[in-house]
Image (cartoon, rainbow, N blue to C red):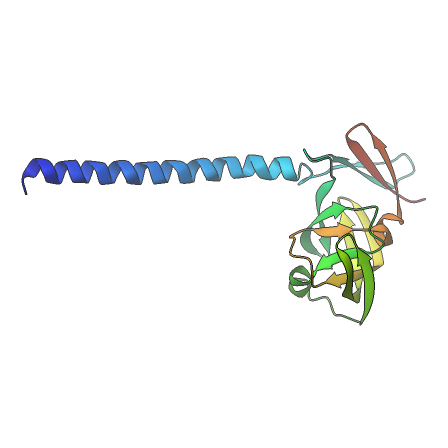
Length: 173
């Protein structure tokens, strides 16, 4: 083997390493952009109404959904607002991380058919500067998503109105 072959092989290896590093950097950079498109409400716009009640303005994502960061019992979570869901529905793997306790089970009708879920209670749910207490919820072992469906058991406790691609949630009077 001569010196030119060794240098050429080293050069080819270096080019491959450079390409892998370049692609990894692009993925890292664009992942933030993609995350922002899926959840444009990572830091939702907060305000106070003239009567002192809290309000949160959410932007639609590219799919037309309202996804936002929030908290359950002080732990950060991601919510997908779902006015078609009767209860807040929490994937089992997230419920385990939140240390939510199953209090019973029931059969429910979902878009994918009838399933068994476990009932639970959320002590505190926060969206921006809106706090809700003692919210009925379900732990759903069939959900693999990383978002919690924010159903009507929570949404019925806020006023909401949609204007264009914005949804405004307000504390009830």
